[in-house]
Image 1 (tube, one colour):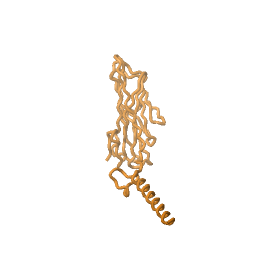
Image 2 (cartoon, rainbow, N blue to C red):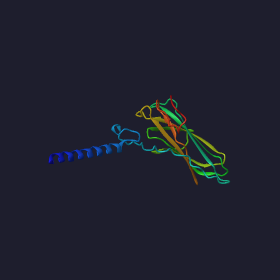
Image 3 (spheres, one colour):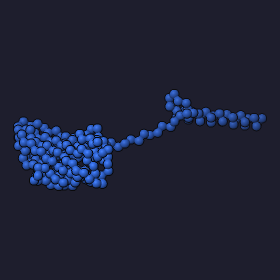
Image 4 (cartoon, rainbow, N blue to C red):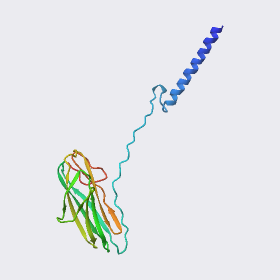
Length: 199
């Protein structure tokens, strides 16, 4: 009699253990999914956000005051490591007042070397970040065109994307250009920047 009672107890405990195991498996299953074929969810890696390029800084319109503007582009079709290309900048004053103590700054990646500035004889200060050109006072309606010849380092790999941007500062204000991208083939430009894709 004792042996039968013991066998019965063990049978009950075995059924309880199987029930608990089945419940635990069902807890992992997704809705509509068989617990015997459930998959354990895995975390999806998240890429860190890409820093946004500098955006143009709006200039408040002051009646009778200056209204400077700034544009930067690159002429870099087919450039390769060790090759040269040119950045072109246009700055001016569309307002009625003088933009005094104006200063243009070009910010370049460190893999570019500045070779020269146009027009020839333009005073320029070469910095670790790029170049600075003092413009003095920008009179109403005045416009200045600048060119910057640069060389790409020979160590730069094919497919690299180079980013540059410019700044125009004057007494009482500051403008920052859109980022300008140059891609060495077979690199592709970011969808939001640059206007000079290379073959």
